[in-house]
Amino acid sequence: MKALEEKILSEGTVLPGSILKVGSFLNHQLDVDFLMEMGKEICRLFSGREINKILTIETSGIAIAIACAAEMHVPVVFAKKNKTGNLSGDVYSADIHSYTHGNDYKAVVSCDYLGKDDKVLIIDDFLANGKAIEGLISILGQAGSTLVGVCCAVEKGFQGGGDSLRARGIDVKSLAVIDSMSDTSITFRAQ
Image (tube, rainbow, N blue to C red):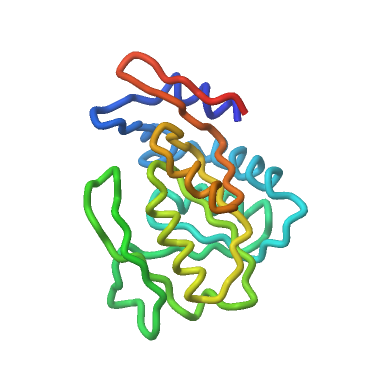
């Protein structure tokens, strides 16, 4: 998505440790009109597929998932990053390591919201080493749900997570794939 690449170049900042800060439009302050355009693009990329739910992980994936769900007219389920008091009953869970935050957490989804009849598109804001996506795929497996595909707004291609998932036969699409980045430049993969 050329518009996303341009927005990353104009508003993004590369931080130490290969962290891309896009807080001005994607994961701190939200550019709602732009998010809705991203949702339309994701819907286009997965048109013709039978999808009845979108799964994401809190927090930054929720906005993109909602934008896509509004186009597809399906519900969004989001994994919480820890079991909370208002999450009662049985849950599916997966241990995940966060590259950005450098910590581990347990993603949980109530068994009430995913099941064997669900055909699910996973959406997230970033794809780096793929650990969050792998955790969500594990949760789908526990639920007996069908994974239709994965879509991320920004893939850090140089970290290999997307390529690893594709090598397993998973349909992964990203709106922008970064092949390399430094303090002074970002290079996108031709799509």
